[in-house]
Image: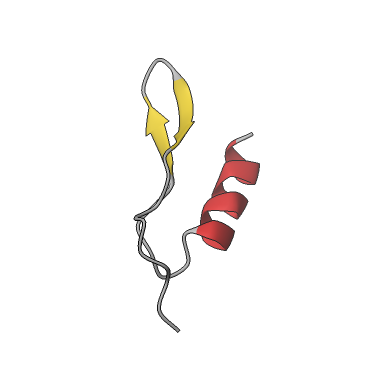
Length: 40
């Protein structure tokens, strides 16, 4: 699971705020990124 989460983090967090957060004692939490679209 940890390996797959790190793969997802690299793929979706590229150049923006992290969306996947580790909650100790709970697991992983997906929080939405900012409402602003990413700049290119």
